[in-house]
Image (cartoon, rainbow, N blue to C red; front, side):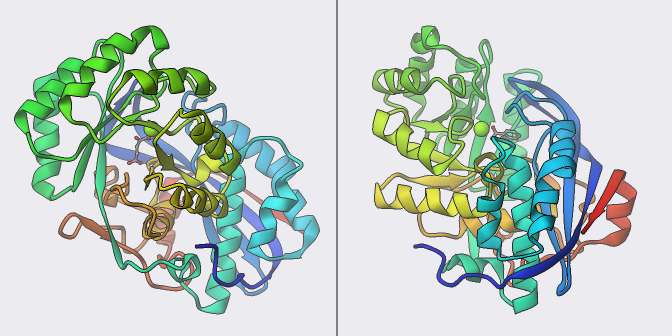
Length: 377
Ligand code: OSB
Ligand code: MG
């Protein structure tokens, strides 16, 4: 289902970028390490028809991907935002093409594109979900649970999320914290939708350990091996009955097609930041839908900006598995939007307001800002 009708062009006047520090309600531990503060970059596109908002989902350190806050900040201000400002007037669908000569830096491209798209849709009075052509007004909400002190603590944390109504649980695993943690959660909660995420922490030499997970009836195992290990993922997929899902490896629609052709994945986690934008994300959705490959919407601890966009994306029909589209309160006591996403009956609502459908809380934005830069034409 390609985008039904193109968005309006906008006359760009500038970009304002901010680094924010948002405290997390609880530390988040993955195979990469522990975070207690979300360092995020918020983009404001300044246009003659009003502002648009986007978010660059880089982390402070280059652990999940090669991008990180300071690389994003530098390339956005030095190269990518100036290239867009040089064009002056452009449609959101043209952003990726203007930025294509610059290699990589997909999270930055995604954040800039989203800000332009939001400005365009707000000026037209159209919601992002409507632009994508979604048919659902809410999406089931899954939650990503970090590694805890021990399996008993993990079971307690998972119980809390299940009590809140989350529709699916994903637990982070790493070597030494895999079979035991998964067994503890599965023993405690027999019937729940459960999946695991390794964040690239294994090699093919760990296939025997990973095959032990087959007995837990998992929805999938996410990114067991390194980002560029497509052939090894295919070999591992042949050894497991648990479906292999790729996250880090899928950096574009081309990478998704290649992974599917190789048999490296039978499920794909779609994250707009990782693939260079929401339009590329829709393209991956479309190609997976044509290939009958289930997809789900991943998360990057987004603020209310990215969280709203993810809810709209996840409402496309090919997103047949619950995504990491949790309530804002999963990570934040205070968000930067006036109406943060809430959990209702295990779902989050697809915003219907113009553009992203959320409004920025200027006081919260200011309170969390630690750096700011504005570029104008
Ligand atoms: O691998 O899916 C991941 C967060 C940061 C970086 C990578 C990942 C994650 C998550 C959290 O699992 C997902 C969320 O935002 O809820
Ligand atoms: Mg992941």
